[in-house]
Length: 353
Image 1 (cartoon, rainbow, N blue to C red):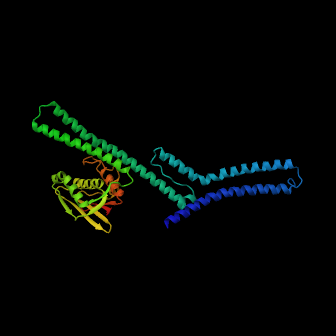
Image 2 (image 1 turned 90 degrees about the vertical axis):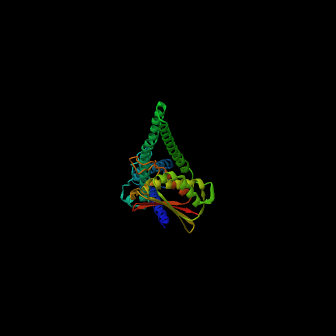
Image 3 (image 1 turned 180 degrees about the horizontal axis):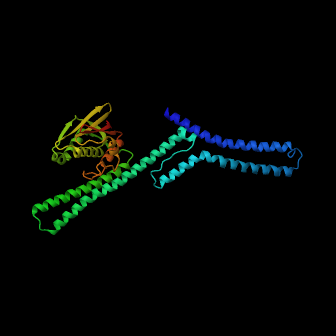
């Protein structure tokens, strides 16, 4: 019904512009016709008149009618075309990088017409999204440069200490371990950026196969054992065996990112729980942790690429993981939601079986 209403409104706007142009022709015809009648009544145009003189008069009338119609069209069209010019100016400002541009039609008709309102709202929504994306990009550059610089400084510092010598074997081993950890951290950040770029450019899901989803999640838990065992986190894997048709490598990335986030923000000695339930033709996978909550105003923002709620850089990460998760889930025809409260956060992924 909404689509039919939109078509009606757009048709009405098209008919309005067409009727304005038609009115120009009617006015011109009346003026030319009135002049012709006047000339006939005065006897200037009559049967047997001087043909060259009459032809010359008709040509002059034609030229006059064209000029008159052009003047009327130029003057009158400025009113209906004013919103169009405003729209073009706003598009040019937006294209030049002014993402604070907003479109506001002036005029009693255009302020109320549904199609004009739809155009204005769509443009303003697009401008707002571009502005948010630009802000997130700037934040990402700041965050990423900080995250990238920290391990490089650590690697250079400890490599310099090793180069200077005069160290015990224990110190050497400790410094080498730190260099290895920081190198792996750099590699992980670079991999995340490359994965996000690759996934964003993908529109068709490929490499689909049927596999044991429950076994895949258990393997992901084992891969992160060092992280959850360091915080004495209790793992609660409350699910049976389920199979799914999907891209196995992509879904593995989803569970690793969600589990890594849950472990990161879970309290020391807290609980991370994973549930799998089946509803009709869909599987719901929930990953929950007991710990830091996500403010309500940030629950939609966390899935945006480059977004990071921790502005102090005290927690690891660069705001790419959940963006990757959301894109992968959407490629599989699913969706992801988050709820948070009472010191508990739950991410739920819905996938078609």
